Image 1 (tube, protein in one colour):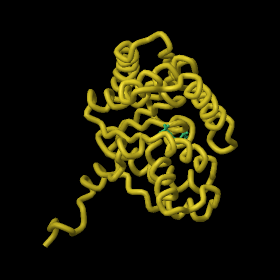
Image 2: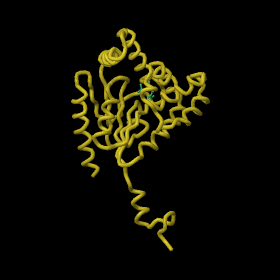
Image 3: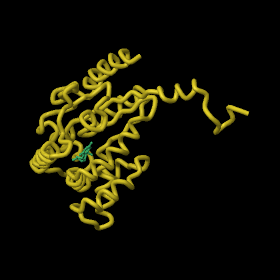
Length: 232
Ligand code: DC
């Protein structure tokens, strides 16, 4: 008997499995540029899986903080990074400011990055398509992605957005402190030796300083549709 479940696959099915392709959209940019909102909308529009890779760095940092472990021990941090479950990432819990600061510190460690990049690449292979957003998706995680977007905005505009967001939830917010924070985070993300934040050579730049999220989405959609028809 041949062809029973678990038995050998016919050459045709084997061939189909080998050639089942996915379509990855890589979205990078600095903190608070609007790439998260944009990525979620794109994933919803195309029915693709979405991963906010910042959450993987945040989950690692939170696990270290919760366990009272230091943020500067690369061996410990890598072990924790390897235990991060992509399915259990909770944006509400991980969005806290202190966790973002700690994430930005551990993100400079090459072994932590390697562990998380491996998990991110496995995610990127899901079919029918994936949207990954972060800092190094187009340059390191998915350098062959058929669509790469680099979403940015001036530091002042990004600080203003974050300020408005905080005021929507809390009674007060300090614009100057937020502005300084955004600039410090940029320096750390763009200045690190391993996988610094920068646009891939073949990325499309979307500056959202004077563009609504809706306009950015429309622009992204035409870039993606053109790439999808080239890939068809
Ligand atoms: O996007 P975010 O604010 O959630 O990211 C938190 C930190 O994680 C950010 O300061 C840098 C780091 N990060 C990274 O180094 N590479 C990524 N692909 C995503 C995030």
